[in-house]
Amino acid sequence: MEGDIILSRKETHRARVMREVEAFDLRLKDAAVVMRVSERQAKRIKARFLKEDLAGLVHRNRGRTPGNAISDSLKARILCLHEEEYFDFNDTHYTEMLAEHEGILVSRETVRKLLRGAKKAPKRKRKPPRHRSRRVRKDQKGEMTQWDGSPHHWFGEDRPPCCLMGAVDDATGELLAALFVPAESSEAYLRLLAMMLRRHGIPQAIYHDRHSSLVRGDDHWSQEEQLQGYQFPTHVGRVLEELGIKSIPAGSPQAKGRVERKLGVLQDRLIPEMRREGIQDIETANAWLEAGAIDRYNTRFAKEAFKSGSLFIAISKQEIHHRVGFAYEAVVGNDNCIRIGGLMIDVPAGKQRRSYAKSKVLVRQHLDGTWTVWLVKEKIAFHPATEFREPVRSWKRRKAKQHGRAKEALQVYIASKPAPPQRGHFPFAVKGTY
Figure 1 (cartoon, rainbow, N blue to C red):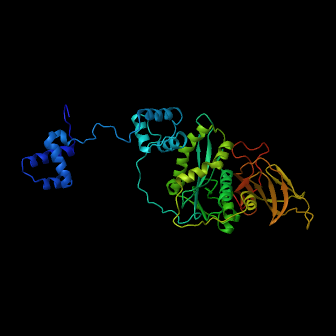
Figure 2: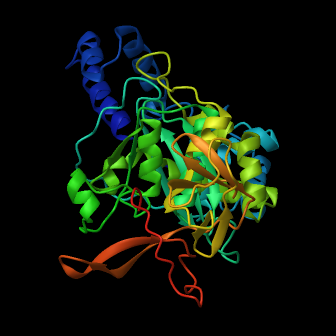
Figure 3: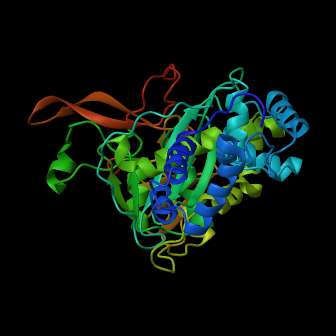
């Protein structure tokens, strides 16, 4: 070996030991123990040292190209593909895309080193972890579900933002249902619930945040609520009660961290994939999710539950259509017509009775926009589909005989974001839901 000889710390240590062996101050058997090698290997080291001096202690692979090293042309291709087509993919996702679409089989660490070496920063910076107590996963699939919404510019910064609704099984981490909606709302949660019921069935419990569509945030108690001893639920809460699903509100985002992390992974992966597929609207994105994106995600990330089997309860499509939707309590007018927010539903004469005037009925709007009117368990009227508008809560003053003018919360059927119609609010209270 010509020129300067550079030894590593281990090689420098071996040189000192070999000097002592050469001077007969240390036996080779003891030198092997000091160098932490076998006696046979110590003999090889001594032979190379006596023949080449310090150069014999240098590792023979130094300066050689590793046998498993990738070529410069392949490195250039990986960097070029990342620059042109996969610029918004994270390291792991990019590695998977290289294997799936480009036929390039390299490790994630190789991709990471190439990108960092080319001064390409990671997609996300990792925050230092905070100490939190871990909640053990549920034992069996269907025992508990977590769901949430993630508003974002899912189709690019130049496109309007929308919201991805996702439901995740706590035991397996499986993505049970996912769909894009304009905004996180009662309608969005009901559509997500319907999708989950259709694909898997009824779970035992749902863990969620305190969004106003799921949990009431007011401290108002009506007279009916005071008499019954509990506040009426939201529309989504009422549907969960009807289906026998336990509703568990979380105290912090970290408490339902599994669905939060899943939505973060989806945000990291779906945006570049949809950009690559040319998807730029909600309808196309939802069809793409159903066609295979959800199953592909579960193949990659779902885990095995501690116990086999499933606790999901099967439910028919007819029952989903009937249960999952908005419901309003109303009173049939003297003209056998129900009026809700400007919508008039005529109630025809029944087989057993001619008139339903002054009857208290339940009016349901289903997720397809159609309306049905129910007297106990009898369907007495139907109305074609109308625009699906989410109800909002409004404070109005109503006369009370004993307490003067008291303020009560009334459910009104109007669009929540635009201004109310010119005719004003419609005081048709929904006593059972908010």
